[in-house]
Image: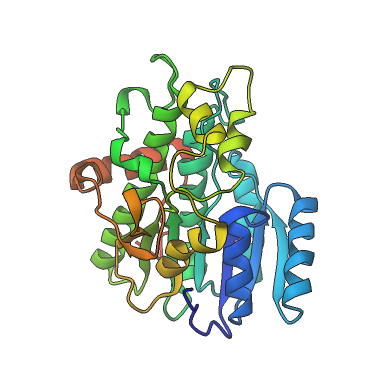
Length: 310
């Protein structure tokens, strides 16, 4: 099992912290000494997760705060609260997401739910927290993507699936490719501006969490055949959450992680096993596309790099 390096004195934010890989990341970061803000959509579930972690690690320093990444007003309220506190942020873990709702759903801001929750919300969160991150000695941003990014495509003409026939799985793949692109573009921006900020990405392979079933229960449509196969048949190698969180923890804390590094399971089909470097699809290595998507995210969210950071 991956041993998280000593995090004493470090301040971290983990989204989607009440279950699955987010909860496990919080537990292990806190056990290593970090003070962790558990960013959750439902505070009651966050408090329950906090209590469960404290039962195992009574010394853990945990705060529960609400944020709904599908709602830019909620992201603004959450980040304004942290920025007002002024505590430098050593680590941001963009873990939360939604997977494959069978029908197209819009966020309060008019975005397709997966693009809004998985990419545009985390983008706004990350950029808004840059003042706190850049105030830390060696800040990191670790973003959870997915193996589906390898077949994702960014359709600038229809990012929100308003004209195409909605595909739950292709929409998910597009949003997770966007996360991988965000990781790489943030790393490029950090290098160009001389920031001591490490931007990394990870994917969990096929880790057994409620991600597959929770998304499929949203909306009014029926889950696709592919989603049903993934959730009802045990024909693919899979792993528990402790193993599945390790690529994310490696990306977030390992001294061996590098800028724009991408980490995932190194075993069968890239779905299970110990952490290894994952090949980045060429669609995430196109500098022109990456810069264009970043600019589009700024336009859609209204969130841009802070003046002092530029």
